[in-house]
Structures are given as C-alpha cells and as structure tokens.
Image 1 (spheres, rainbow, N blue to C red):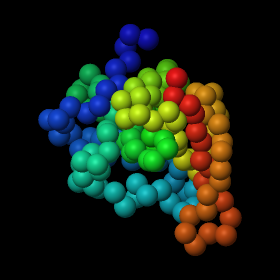
Image 2: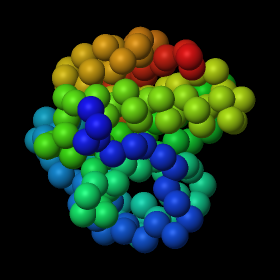
Image 3: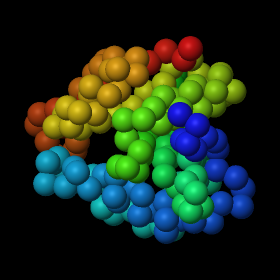
Length: 161
C-alpha cells in the first residue's frame, strides 16, 4: 500500500499540535457516549499533547496535507513500552496503518531494551479488542478506573518481534 504514509518518531521541529489534536478528537469521536468514564482526551489540549511529547515518543504518519493522519504516544514502563493515544484517520482505517504503528513501536521498544508492548482499551470498544488481537496482542488484565467497582478497561500485551 504505497499510498500510506510511513510511521516515524515526530521530527524535532514538529509544530502541528492543533492538527494532531484534531486527529485524536476525530479518531476518538466514536467513543463519545459509549465509554464511562469519558476518554482522558476530553481534558487534553494541543498544548498538553506538545508537553507529552517531551516525556514520551510521539509516532506520526503525515498525510499529503502535512497534517498527521496516524499517531501513537510511546511511554517506557519498567517491563514494557506502553502505546497510548493510538489514532488513525477514519478515511485510512482498515488499510494496514495499525501494523505500521506497531512495527515502529517495536523498533522503539528494541532501542529502549523492552521486549513487550502494552496498551489499554475500554471494555465497551469491542472493535478495538478485535483489531489489537488481530495484531498479535492478548488480553492480560482488567482495570477499573478510580471510583468504579467494575472493570472499565482491558490491558493487552504483545511480545516484541
């Protein structure tokens, strides 16, 4: 699929934080009214995303317009590399970009000496469970957000290839 953008760590001069925020809002809009509690994205601004990139690796796929069309934040944990805020523009879903994001995350995990990728997705988002399972992730735990007496999200892990 030659027309898909490559996925790479954000360049040092990346400055399209508002466009990144729009991608995440668009990508996560299908969760609205489906998940409880609401996504942490509802309280994040473009400036917050820029600050996050100071402590986490931001992976990007840049479209022809120069704006991000795919992203993920990578946060090193003691025994894994955590993938957060994974987003793919709706027009590009189902075309293999998730596999490119995972490959880029694996390269970063190897660089950081981690042999496992980890992510979390909400219990209600069964389409995400299916996509991540198809990409080699397996559910390893459930988690309840603060104030909830039942699981609200699932933890998935995948060994680094």
